[in-house]
Length: 95
Image (cartoon, rainbow, N blue to C red; front, side, top):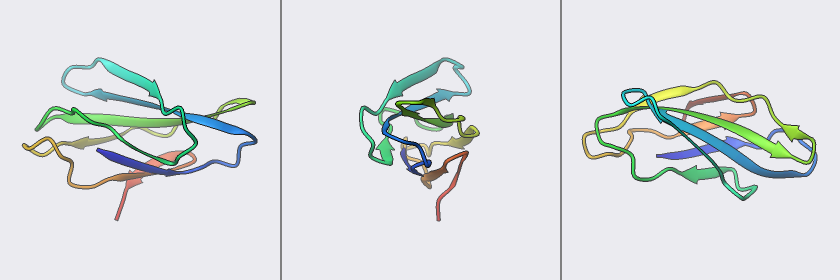
């Protein structure tokens, strides 16, 4: 699953926090990108499973408001049909 987003207008942006979980299992995964790059590929997702994703920016002044969660189901092969774009306050399907 590849996610892309637009950097919010923060001073000294340091990294991003990505949260995701399988809606079937319910256990959340949270990690930081350790980068200011505005994209990330989440790997090792289970096939034919619903996942919810959220992105938060980190800066020297704290955390941005979190994006809305977006849920998408992986294909039977484990790959998603689309990617999502995070724009400061939301993730939405890419084109």
